[in-house]
Amino acid sequence: MSEATKQFYAGLLQRHGTSCRALSFSSVSTQHMRFSALLPVLPPALDAAFSLLDVGCGFADLYGFLLEAGYRNIDYTGIDIMPEFTDHAAARYPEATFVTGDFLRLGPQAGTYDFVLSSGALNLVNEQYPDHYDFVFAMVEQMYQTAAQGVAFNLLSAEGKRHFAHDERFFYCQAERVLEHCRRKAPATELDHGYLSYDFAIRSRWENPTAG
Ligand SMILES: C[S@@+](CC[C@H](N)C(=O)[O-])C[C@H]1O[C@@H](n2cnc3c(N)ncnc32)[C@H](O)[C@@H]1O
Image (cartoon, rainbow, N blue to C red; front, side):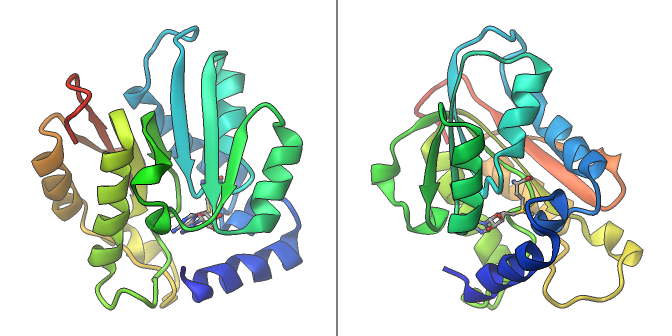
């Protein structure tokens, strides 16, 4: 588990309380734009029943967003390394399941979910991985192994780096490199680089439940 990541969010939580700023988002609207870009991987029917794992769930705002959108049969599980975040999320959504821990350490006993989604959890440099792509691809590998039908996640984009003052805690990825990696796992993977100039989403869906 990355101690730097825990300390980063503990500091934000102390400063901002349980607002989206504690999750390092500048506003609810950009947080929601990121969520919207993950949604096309899910079944379009709002009454569809499926299980969903939210990796790096924070306060489970993604679950609230999906409920607001009208989904009503989601068996939702959120995982986060921050106990303060999962405690708050569990109090908000007692019907959902929350796990406190590092997604990378879950292993196969984590079971399988129809969909695995992750928003904003892959952007902080992890001191255990000198090459940030190794961290991203380790998380991605675990997501594909844990999902039966589809995966969607987002990353800060190398092209968007100019929007921000230099902060060595954040990493900005080459979208094409991540897309190429994910297409080797699921050929129908798509890249969405159109919702924010500094962020992109990767979405993979497959028919064969054993693929990934
Ligand atoms: C930018 S916040 C986003 C929270 C939430 N996904 C949202 O969009 O509102 C990223 C979250 O990922 C969590 N996280 C980072 N690495 C993780 C890991 N390896 N396992 C579980 N959670 C992780 C952090 O603790 C943090 O709460």
